[in-house]
Image (cartoon, rainbow, N blue to C red):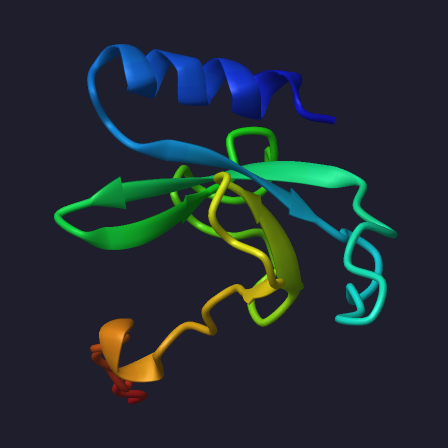
Length: 111
């Protein structure tokens, strides 16, 4: 579960970039009263310009740097030697992901 995330973190550490292992409960929600139970997936928390970037290097259906569907909002365990509680993954802000569609329609002239 952790091999790819650990390798990714080690590569970033060699470049002096802070990256931490994050354990994720992929098929449920972690509970605050038993925080060490139910983790079956690992991602990375990379800190760039003081902001966390949550990176899943193993999921083939999401683009690099994006959380897989279902992961936003989950409680995770960040392995950084400082965090003592579960951390909730961020939920995307709709205003940060605008979508604009444009189109045209031509009506055929029948004679």
